[in-house]
Length: 473
Image 1 (cartoon, rainbow, N blue to C red):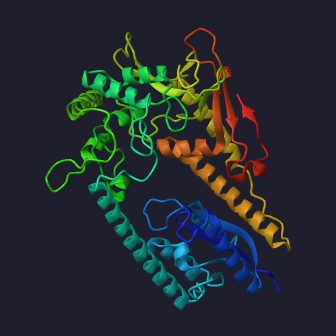
Image 2: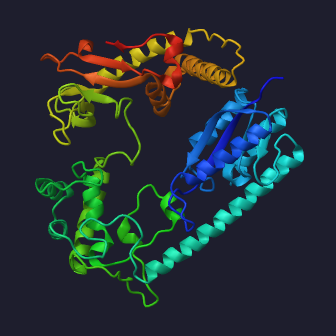
Image 3: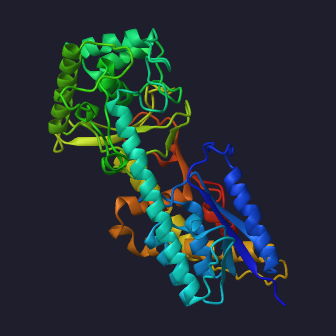
C-alpha cells in the first residue's frame, strides 16, 4: 500500500508571551507535534511543515507565505493532503476557506483532517464544518479587535502613552533625554523659522543621529520626528483600519480631543511650546505642498518608478545606487528632466559613480530577454519515481516550480513590449541578483563593459534545472 505524503499547517497570530506564559514559538511547536501524531495515526508520512508564525489570518492584506505555498502544492498534486490543529488556524476569512474547500471539491481523494473540531475536508459535511469554524474564528477575531480598539482609545483619552517602542528623545518613563531632546527642540525652532528638513537633517547628522536601524537618519524620519504631536504633549490616535487604508499619515491631523474640545495631553515631558510646534508644522507642510506642485516630491512610499531601482550597486564602495534626475540645459531636450543612477555621497556611498538610466536599463532589459529566451526553451524533465515519500515530495515540488518558471519566462518573452513596469521588475527580481557598475572612461557614450549583471543563483530552485549560472557582461 502506497504511503500518503501529507503536509502540516501551523499558525499563530502573535508570538508574544501570553497570560499562560507561552514563550515565542511554543504554540506552533505544539500544533506541529499534535498534527504529526494525527498523521502517524492515519498511516501517512509528513513531508513538509507549512508555518506562518506571528501572522494574522483575519486581517485583510496580510500575505501568508506558508498558506500560499500549501494551496499551490495541493493544487499541483505535490501533496496527498494536509493536517491542521483547527480550522481557525488555517483560515479566518471566508475567501481563504473557500479556496481550500474548492481544492477538495475538485480532488476529494486528498486527505484534509483536523486535530480538533472533527473536520474532514474530503467530505461535503466536513467542508461545511470547516467553513463554519472559519467564520466563527473570524467573528472571535473581530470581537477581540473591537475590544482592543476600545481599550486603546480609552488609554489615549486618559493621556497614557502608546504601548510600543520608546520615542526618540524620551526614556520609558516619559522624561526627556539629551542630547536627542535638545536636537529635537532646536530642529522644531529652526523649522518654525523657515528651515527645511535637509538643513535640520544635516545638523542632526553632524551629531551622529541615526534611525532605528542604526543607519544615518533619513529625511522622512527627520520630518516625522519634527511633526510628532508628542513634542508638545498631545496624544494622537488612529485605529488599525485607518492606518491600513492610509499610505502615509500626517500625524498633526490625528491629535485626539476630549469632550471639552481641547487636545488630550499625555503624561510625558514636552519638548516645545504649542505656538512654536504649530509654526513648524505649517512651515514644513508648505514646503511639502510646494514640492508637490513642482513635481519634485518623489514617488509615493513603496512605489518604484524605474526598472532597476534598488538593484544597482557601485563596485567602488559597494553602496546601493539611487535614482535621481537632472534638467537638460541645452539642445532639443532643453527643459526636460533626464533620470540617472548615482552612488550617494551619504550612507556609506562614495558619490563618484553615475550612469544614464535609459541606456543602462535598455542594456539590462536586452540581456534579461536573452536570459528569458534561454529559460523558455529549456525542457522540464519529469522527476523519477521513488518509494521515498520525502524525496518524492521534493522532486514533485521542484518540477512544479520549474514549470512555473518556464511558463512565466515564455509569457514574458511573448508579451515583453506590453508588460507594465511591476511585471518587468518581477521578472528582473526572479533572474537578476544585482547589477554592478564599474567606473567608465571619460566620454558621453554608454560602455556595456562597465556593467556586470549578477544572475540569481537559485530563482525558485530553477538554476539547478537550467544549469547555467554565473555572470554576464
